[in-house]
Length: 616
Ligand SMILES: *[C@@H]1O[C@H](CO)[C@@H](O)[C@H](O)[C@H]1NC(C)=O
Ligand SMILES: *[C@@H]1O[C@H](CO)[C@@H](O)[C@H](O)[C@H]1NC(C)=O
Ligand SMILES: *[C@@H]1O[C@H](CO)[C@@H](O)[C@H](O)[C@H]1NC(C)=O
Image (cartoon, rainbow, N blue to C red; front, side, top):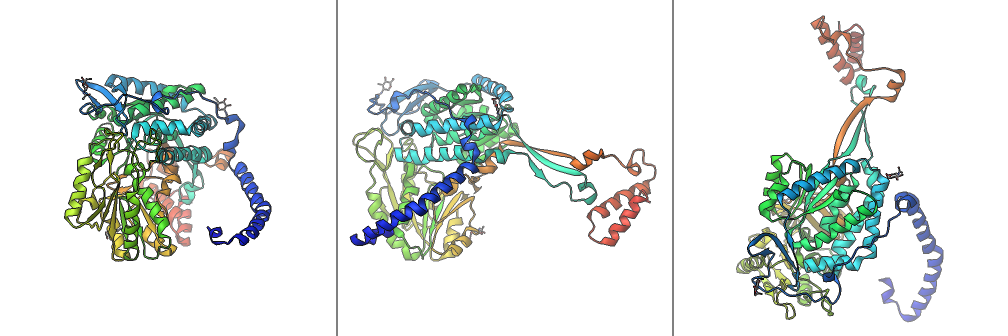
């Protein structure tokens, strides 16, 4: 940035300085960092864990210039008339038919879980070296085939390749490589202090060992078909579990391919591929799956109404759940914000990526008065420029893709109408868009709605669509109240120039995740992810996510020194059955309490004296 203002002559001078600077300062620094990096993460470069090469055929539907037949309404749907057990798949951006699949039957679910358990019985004893090799092989394959994976995700979800590369591929690679680097350390037995009682603590050590749960399940949403499916698989495999993914019926076509990719990795490393399986069914049969006694844990990513059903089913077997639901995430803009143009770019991406179908998408921009009009002006220009279409089929540049289906369009329109009737200004969009090349595609116009306030439904209800809403706050307290003022509490961003002020606001937000002067990077950073209030409970991701897929087995043992001297714990005579003297027994235990917990020296001395006399 600094270079931009320099005149040409200054440029040359600057250039020489820069070269010298580069050779003698930057280059050595980079090499030093690289060397440090290698030595600090030996896992990454362990020759015994080299990724292996895979050959996985790419489906024709994801190849460039593919021409598939288009479906027309009323056939443009995932239901197949008269065949309740079939799921039809099509591209939401073009309406092209992708295939028809059988829903998983109850008998198949049973068999899957039996097979998974069998595979897990040997996988639970695998070493971290082998588990890392699985992840490294996946990571290498993804790196070498980014285009194909993005195209497969786009074909099934209608998003753009850029949306896929950021929201599907980058986050998955980060998860893989973060666990490769840190996973083993997190899952090592954790040493704990023994009891605080001096007399007992002297003898005992505590330890927590993390053992796999068995067969776990993840019920994942359609908005990131690659990432949402891979995330739970990566965590489950690394913790020694088997996993059954229940994908959304909206994205069964790509989910099948992604699952097969993982199974190829397992097979190539001579690991039982039944560790990872795919289940897909309509909501009517989902209850059977989530109440299955063979499952040890359920991760659910989806909407609140469905979460009620899943948790209710899981309760039949007392299966623990992590529940990650929607949000009404806000981005707070303080008055002292400096680079408003850069901020507008962050907001555009945070709102319109994947056509706004993000659980941590920016649903509300809460802005203090000073920058409000300026931001409205910038967005009025920028939102209008977004180009819609099918990125993998068109040669034109495309900014925003389709939505997964048109079944929520009426709802989106109603939310916008309600806001306008209560005084919001609709500057762009607000209705479905019919693409000239792809009239069957499910497009919704990028929408800009300003002067929104808390009386409007769109302030409270999750949109999950391409709608940018601007809310004006009178001051910082008002902004915080507005941010906290919904039933959700998933994510927030705050932008301001004073770190101290921003940092104080973080502590006043009812929110599971907060990014300071950034958007959603808490997700990429592999921190524990999950919301508060009606955004769900429990965490996946990060250390907590890995540990959550384990039984924390508490083990207590004699200290090594005690074992060395052969001192074993036994019941002292005064309290051994049959109790010989009630008074002495009481005296013994109460003195043990005093000796162990009292902070007054004289009392402790007296207690020891009493103990020495067997409680008398
Ligand atoms: C819908 O599918 C049925 C059965 O495949 C077919 O007979 C009918 O012509 C299709 N309708 C349209 C509008 O394509
Ligand atoms: C880990 O397990 C694999 C496969 O069982 C074995 O070949 C390898 O030697 C083991 N590695 C270590 C470090 O124990
Ligand atoms: C968030 O704001 C609401 C409404 O003003 C308030 O009730 C709540 O206590 C706040 N949360 C925190 C963590 O301060």
